Image (cartoon, rainbow, N blue to C red; front, top):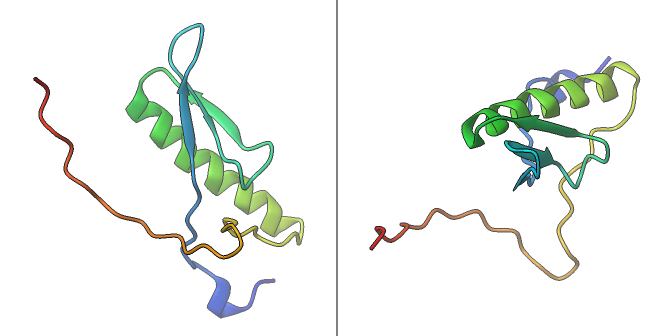
Length: 89
């Protein structure tokens, strides 16, 4: 069983969303090999990604495996930022 301080801890992962050749979108999570899902729309793909990651992490926890952290390249600092997107012309 996980220590209480680890329960309900938030983790962040980079999620790659790419158009699928047959339509819709394919989602992969590089830090979680095998964590792959899809969605018919971009928004659905995002929600499916969340469900997929949560299920993937639950399976790891149930089997006693460690929860992987998102890797940061050596010598780099990861920074998350929001920027305004320009209006379409």
